[in-house]
Length: 167
Image 1 (cartoon, rainbow, N blue to C red):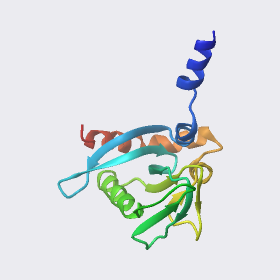
Image 2 (tube, one colour):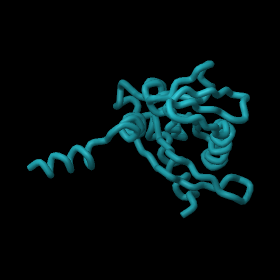
Image 3 (cartoon, rainbow, N blue to C red):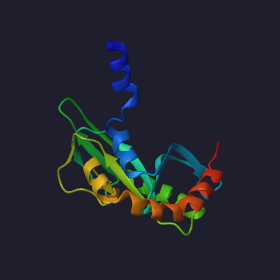
């Protein structure tokens, strides 16, 4: 009985990131690779079909104080035990948005960088950055029935995007 309970909690109940993305998405593809328009390809961490169109979510797990800004080339994280930098993720997100827009021209395409719990921005939050709660507030739907009707209009474009995915 205990083994079944552990299995159910660990493997069947959506947790954390999956719970947030599943609450927003009517359909979802993780790790999709699409043409980038320059004879190359680009990988998308999470592509969600929402009532507002398509949403690209790039996830950063950077617990600590984050020093980042829209125009900064590199962002710095200061955690209790270390300090590190990484490239500003927004330009790469813009590239992903552009690649998807080339395929589904008539559908709204948005992108957000999702910082998981534990990240705090010291000097303001950059434009495309959201916490899980903010992402849910921005893209979640209180009226799922009405949202589902909106999503139906995007379905053909969603299927078209799947055909362009690189396998």
